Image (cartoon, rainbow, N blue to C red; front, side, top):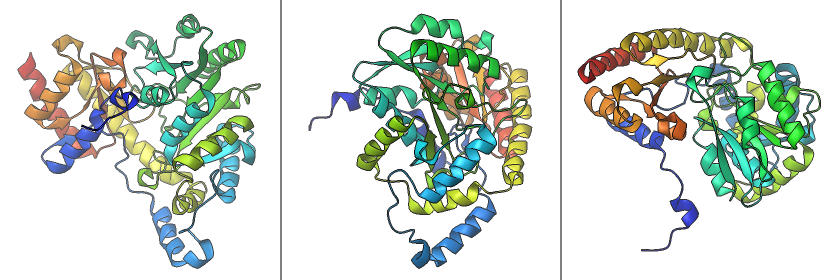
Length: 388
């Protein structure tokens, strides 16, 4: 057997990829697993895509873009950040990436040295830990507790900081818990970062999908321009997952370093996607609002049903996930998810996918057709009754 690197061998096996495969093969399975909008990309964007293809000689979409992204897209992002996020951005402080996943990875590569530490929310987005480890740095778990609404506890952050700490990852709205952090809490986190000279890596992938409050970008606070790297994507707000388009805003030296890394990883984000991204940023809000309202309808239904069935579930304030407590069933989350799939044909993600403090929880995605969610809840109820 040929040698495989220790780094690769230590990476966790993601369950989500397997769920996608199973759901595709077996049409009887209802998948409430993957975090991908079930909506089509808005029609004006698809129509624009057709027009781009017919004008290739003029737009040259079959050619490479600059590693930092097209100038016209970055100019559009500058306007968007000022309008929507209250971030006074400059074009030289923005880099376009192949999805926000690449933005996260290249940010970490560009700011961390071997054995330096990053504090990450746990349970939290499953890519943070491997991205840090691939950067030869060390992830440090910040426990998020259900009784605290899965919010970040600033006092707990302070206890984790040491001489090797270089940054804190903040995710609002959160995957998997749907938590939206308040301005007051973000201000406390900002103070901690400034007082300890730490980066804040602010993952805001679900910024447009908020239900009962509003999104606050920590990068908009006074005095934070040298501390915050804001990470955003077109995937969720515009249902553009397949276009693989994201971006980051941060200090000029960090963005310049990311440009170097990206040149050797993907070279540049797809030119065709960038052209559609420009159009997306000028899209009337009604297209996003239509999706958000439907997610909200699903959210209210699924949370109510999950609690009625006996899976204690806090109401998510953003994103499109319900994170349910299954501790009363005395089953590990991986076992619960496997049995639910095999016995009831409903696919969900075990909480341990999101870190060790996710044990005892299951994530349900309501980025799925309403009728299928209703059917899945009926199957879940029958399954739970058999467990009792």
